[in-house]
Image (tube, rainbow, N blue to C red; front, side, top):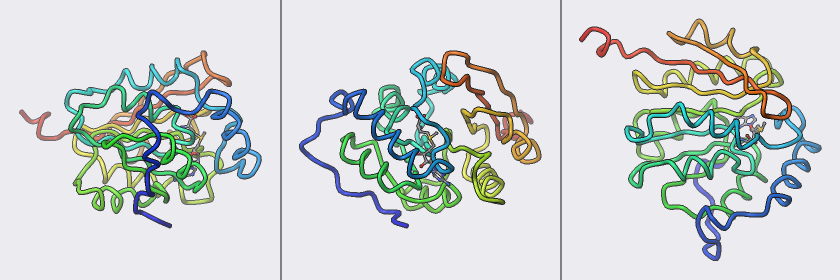
Length: 214
Ligand SMILES: C[S@@+](CC[C@H](N)C(=O)[O-])C[C@H]1O[C@@H](n2cnc3c(N)ncnc32)[C@H](O)[C@@H]1O
């Protein structure tokens, strides 16, 4: 799998001129029909879910934000709207069609689009010239992943986060919580009804021992 960003379509403008609502939904639905287990949802996340997930982030102190499973960029555009000018957004998706779509649709120097598995996040962070992430946001359907992959992704994510960093997950069930609890110091979740179907918002924090000792 390529870990090198694909070439951008320079004819496209920034996040404002993205593909139409229907084009995004059509693309998403086609990919779901092709790979139901990998996509895990028939339609993209709602605007309310996006806002509520991103409201948890301390944007001013964010230098590297990682997004797993950006799909057609439902969260990606809103992350870029909030991200500081000198920060980086690294997106990782296993589906090459989504990677190519995102590369063609969003032209932003802060965005690095990678084709690969979230299980390799530390390698991708290193290749992007960073050491650790401040936040990792995930839309990956943990309950339909092959055996062992979910646990590996959670362990790698913890290692990839800086102390005090957080793993933010939106998911239709609490299935992933059993993988997070042994690894993270603080795991909490709540429900967002304004999504089809209603969605769990899970936050797993990697404790900052230095801050605690001070
Ligand atoms: C439910 S879709 C989320 C799409 C979008 N973020 C949204 O909220 O509408 C799940 C995404 O996870 C991606 N995915 C599945 N397994 C993955 C893995 N191991 N690593 C990275 N991405 C993965 C799929 O290709 C798909 O883009």
